[in-house]
Image: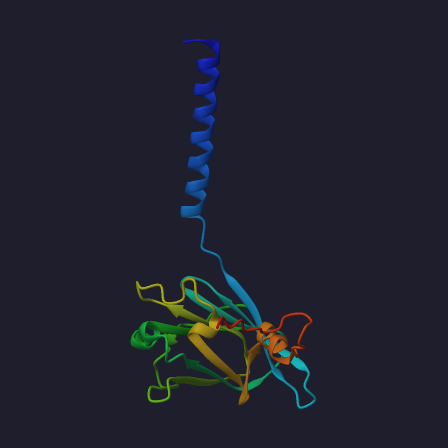
Length: 187
């Protein structure tokens, strides 16, 4: 083998090693986790952040923005369009996390605080700083989903919106500037 042939073989081996490292990191690193801030709209129209929501493959973490806030009620309504989630609600658990960041014993999501006719879990969140919704199924009910694909949330009877959807909704569209809608019709 010539000198250039051995250099090419060495470069080929380096390329294969780099490709192997990239592929193994994609396969073995945890899937991306989506995090968003949810809040309510004040009567004045201002957005007030209440919780941060982090969606992982097997759990959702809902954490208060201000741990000292006392939510008299928090409601989680299953998205009826997500049939896999509705069918497997018995395999979900709720785990409350106290002010010292210690998780409590998991309880069934579809327990006494769940209304199966309305698909609503409702409880107070006065002493806890966070709650986890844990997926015990093998189906990966939360994997690759946004929170709005899974649940709708109400805090103290008010609908919680993500900051992204709040600011998108409040944005006015002016024709011929920014993003506007146009339709081309061929006759």
